[in-house]
Length: 129
Image (cartoon, rainbow, N blue to C red; front, side, top):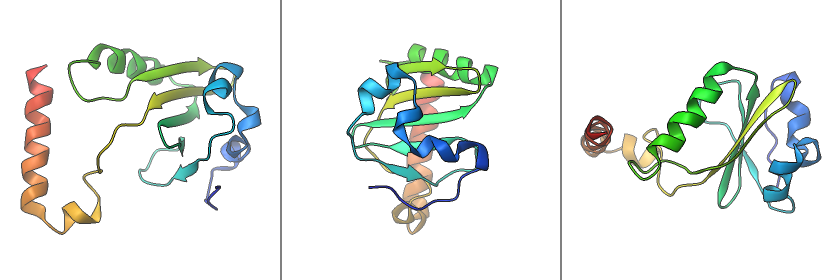
């Protein structure tokens, strides 16, 4: 199930799972996915039923993200890092997919008081770490 989406030219080939590193491919081969268009990053996000794959250009910040996510495991409800690979051009972060809705979901936007309460709870959880 592939959605038609706009992709930066340099990431268009990433909709073909054959171009992924073998370590990532072994987790996602044969699984249905769709592209996630929420957000403003230039990363390509592929959503599977149980996994999320973030494909982005080389950046030292991605290494930091992986390190922080692994450190937060068990402390906050963050995705589990399943696999992290890098080649000459891209970084591939494969994570577990956690349940829930994003704060920009229409359900929350229609009820801003509830949204503010949930965001405040999330900040309190973050501060507790």
